[in-house]
Image 1 (cartoon, one colour):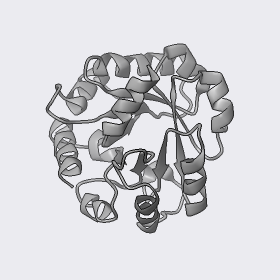
Image 2 (cartoon, rainbow, N blue to C red):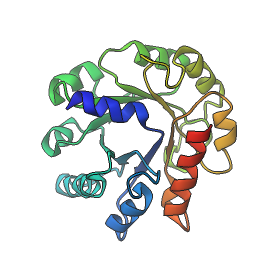
Image 3 (cartoon, rainbow, N blue to C red):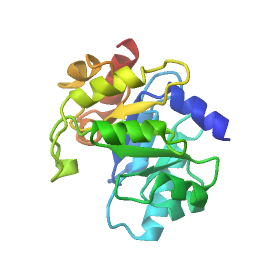
Length: 221
């Protein structure tokens, strides 16, 4: 199971963080897309202060939408929900449960991702055997990370030097923060090839077309 998850992670480009929304299932179907068309590769349910049962239902909706399409499903912060629902990934921040302790809670098969906001944090996560992928950012100011100043494009440039995307053995990393059609070219110019999006899809007039376009841009570089 872990080997298959790592395989899917290695090929992933487009990572969506989303709260629940009206017609959640159809939205997920649209942004994930049919097999072979290209769309979202990972989906994280990110909605603060959810009741436990509501978060379980949301994660199961994502898992159902991605079934048969190699989509990875991530819980945010909550090791208990990760273990209970059997999703693929637990994502933690710098102030959440440490990855080594999270590993003890979720077991060896679950992938663990960690957010980083400085060169020191990125390099520590890169060297951490319990961290399977790293997020760097936010590179631009974003309302989804209120109070956190943007780190700019220097951090993904550093990440690209230390972990060139798709180099065999290099740990995957994703750029976060204000990623969308207007910023994707500058982000790709840093050497990044994987991104996390929120409003670029959740606020899109045509989420399916937006997801397909971003996925295509990431795969063509």
